[in-house]
Length: 399
Image (cartoon, rainbow, N blue to C red; front, side):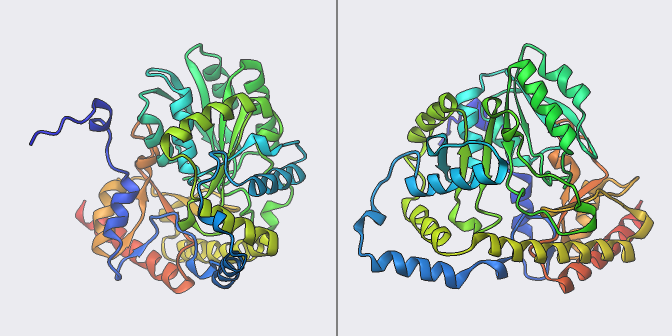
């Protein structure tokens, strides 16, 4: 039978990262490819305790449909926590629970992108955002990332163009580069948004993962939302600080924007899983989430240091690394090497990564790779870097 798919879906390719992950299910492969949290840090016992407490209440409401906006208590908790942490007033009716922040990308695309609208993106940028927005056929515009954040001269010029609809950015420990905007760059972005009258979609899954390190003294992770709340839609996630399998995220938005996103979500899935919302609310109101996040930060900081040391030891001057002061990734350049071609040799040596050009809208960053350090132990990280060195040696011999 001939299946008549839409032109849009026929023009889309599968996620490069998801396709690589299919290769890495083999136990012998050490994968630096996925952005996976450390599974040993998932709070098994306290989740079990929270679940038992829910069942002990014998409340059938935990199995019932809920509102599209989500669990009221959880939204109130998010609003208060965000307001207190970032010195900005947020109310629960500005918050919506979503099925992972990836859904927020899709919902925002539905309500805000018409075909050929200009969508401004960091270069490089998160592959999942590219995929989500491509469903709505925009024209992408790239603005270069510098070490202290986006190039604000280029950003101002691009945002003042009439067809530029909004800006999507990740100011904290950006995916894939790991870079973080300076306080000055955050203020400049906020000012440009206000001057241009345009919106930013601020993606912040990693903001809580700032490492305790001499290099991070004075570093800020304050959201741009706090500087220009009428011009920013903020996306948060529990995947990196709780568990990813629950697929729980949230949106904070100006009320007119949130109202449209609610309509889009009603059409998509009615509401996010009500049982896991109730479970999360039980967890955060009976446990110290910040203490749990501190353990995650300390663990990931040590893993990052292990990877950096291994790269210096085994790859040395063959590569260059962007600074990573938090988050989950190290952005590595291998000058003169076609990193996409290198991937074959890496797989042959049972190690995997994501080539940099997967994060580019224009096919750039061909000599870059993104390495994840959070999901592996120190022994695996060191062995994986050794294998990467073997792959690089094999690649050079073949040239």
